[in-house]
Image 1 (cartoon, rainbow, N blue to C red):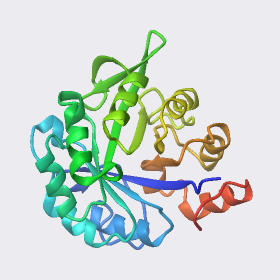
Image 2: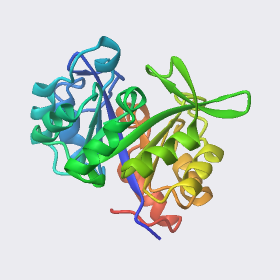
Image 3: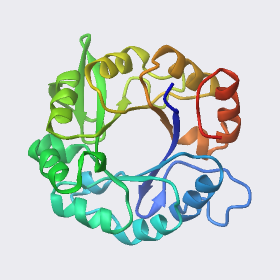
Image 4: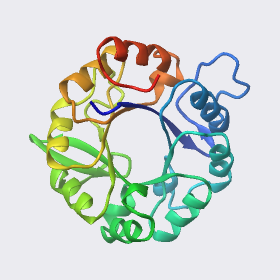
Length: 252
């Protein structure tokens, strides 16, 4: 079995992590730099850094905070938010990101993925996609899940992979924040459609949700979450011990 990854997500707005954090011993619980250090030292396999208002504000991602955060991280770092051109890829990679996540930018310009993949390699290009059921069909949403693009999600994901996306982060709007578990049906459909790593996002509320995810959809490569890690509701160390007890391969 492929080693399963656990990935905390830092949602950053105005240079601060916006989902509340409750960690003892952190000098600044809203600092992405401090949080990145904490997760690097406490079992995270990778980190995701999203500048969540860069696209909606129509501006570029905060590179100063990103550069400082990247210096603190010794695990793979994926960065997204406000990525609309190859120049944005270049800027973020030069700050120390290992991978660049594109969402709205790819919807506006589908050629962005192929252009970036040719320059930097498929392994650098991550497609992030927000998906919601509309009349029983999985649809792609834009602008932080507020705007229905009308595109069918599985076909969009397949198209982006054929263009050079080397990894997919699938965020289920239906389960996001509900903390009742991941969207297993949707994730299974995505995993069956592509042959690149798929990261599940949206719905984790407890350790058992990750166990169910990896047992029910064995093709899923990783589970991503934010608030349950930030609030200390789930400790990554405890999660990984339970994964091991359930015969799920992970890095301890």
